[in-house]
Length: 82
Image (cartoon, rainbow, N blue to C red; front, side):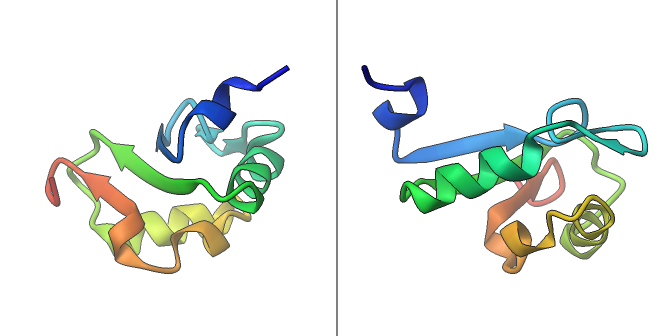
């Protein structure tokens, strides 16, 4: 049986409400990202929050223990960078 994610080689996540909500990390966010990456998926992040640039988003990812997934600016998009 194939998992839904197995049908895709690239996955784009919204951030707020998907990976974290307010100050809390969504349970399973890290494990999900890790499993997708281990399976070879390219993972990108998108936000409609235009008040932050890529460096500010990396800081938010770090607060949630997810910084390893955004070590490079090309993985983070918002309405400013899009």
